[in-house]
Length: 206
Image (cartoon, rainbow, N blue to C red; front, side):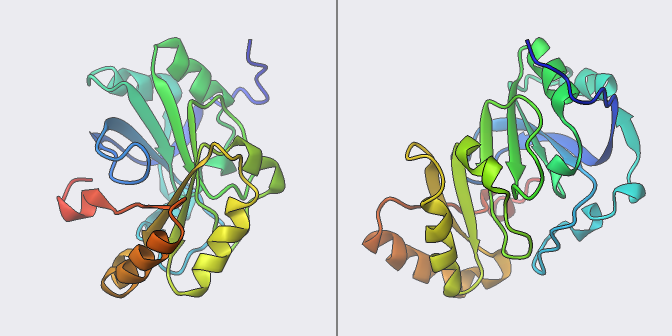
């Protein structure tokens, strides 16, 4: 039985849609995405800066979101942002799981963990480092590589997550032509890492 910390029944939602997961371990799988508004991490290269201000986005009832999800054959729901853990997600995940859906989250780990998750993708950012308490829960570590110093940053967090955690290096989209060859060479020298590409951008899906 999950003990709810917060009976949050509505959440600020920038967008929600059924697509395929374009990144990381679950790349290529069908998934329903819920992008929550609100972020205080502030990555300079963020491609969804419109998500940062939670007040810009309508608050949608969790029950209404589930109605929309159930109109699709989705089996996985990915909660992303923004930084989704700025909101308490206990009730959201309880209701998703009650309908048989798998719960995935993409987070920087900069806020306390809430919710009950089948898969946690931790993507730490230099702009606001993850909390130590979130590191042991990571199933997947996905580090966005913007420059060469990010490899050292990646190793710092690889040493802090569980040994079972999948390790991914992902080129920052605008610098991908320069960064991707560096990542390939790094992975060849350090084969515990794998390459993550933003497949959805290559095939033009949300």
